Amino acid sequence: MSKSKDTSNSTSSSHIDKLKALDSKFSKLKGSGGFINKRKSIEVEKVSTGCITLDRLLEGGFPRGRVVEILGNPSSGKTTLSLHLISSLQKQQMSCLFVDVEATYTDAYAKACGVDTSTLGYFCPDSMEDAIEAIKYAGEVIDFIFIDSVPAMTPSVELDKDAGSATLAIRARILSQEIPKLISIAKKSNCTFVFLNQYRTANIGGYGPSKSGSGGMAIPYYTSLRIELTKIGSLTEGSEQIGHTSRVKIIKSKISAPFQEDTVDIIYPNTSYARTSGAGIDRVGDIINVGKECGIIQLKGSFYSYGDELKVQGKSQLREYLSSNPEVLERIGKDIQSHKPVAVE
Image 1 (spheres, helix red, strand yellow):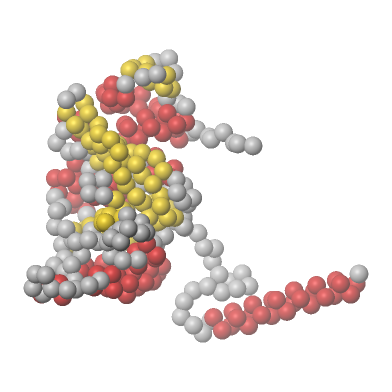
Image 2: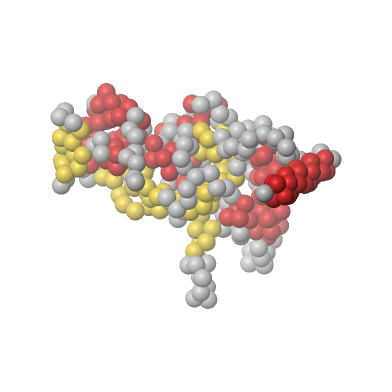
């Protein structure tokens, strides 16, 4: 018995000695970390997205100090989601930079999504190299950088070539070299780089996935979070189309449970609904969807109800009622925040 105990103590002592030896070696290297209770606790800092649905999917909010990809088909809501995130981040005193590679940004659309354009950094690069250099420099001082988008990042060699000249995989090679550098910057400065990407057809020979994002495998490999947006339906108010519903799916996550999904309503600017409730991710629709999931808003047939004070038919009428009665909307929001999920045994 005593012999077994002595052996255990000897093994433990040897284990500690090895860690101490490695700790002394680490102290001579550039980097952070260590053993023997010297290193700091490693946790992911998160900030609210301003959307209850997204915060629930991400288990608290958007990560800081990471590389993120927002991916989807054309018109699925990628830029609108980014502008909504910028609006929410600005309200939390976070600095943001919008790198407009596509050269399609307008202040009017950003303001409709709630962005304070007077405090938003903006840069429109001439080439992919200019975009990369700008975000590497800005990453040392800015909290969140949004790059819109990867397919529009055109290397200077392509700009200088004649039409039809072969420039195979240059974008992918540049990203493979530069993304690891961004990770190093993100780690040191706590900056988050958000790349907007678009699906393209990939299944040429009949095998493998039918679509993939542009820019090769560097972004999917190095990102901590990948969010996929898919347009699944239209939103109408009378005969007017005021927006669409997008499915949000977490297709990769190192900061929350992956493969979770939900839906958000995206409102177009210059519509009758947007003039009263704003464009971008619809807060009213967000509260309706989450309230229904929590059981706070009841749905029986086509009728929605909230306690004894509200009963309307159809989601569009419920949205209109809550937009006109913000005090009821706020009460539902508070009920959602105080709601505790039922434990499953």
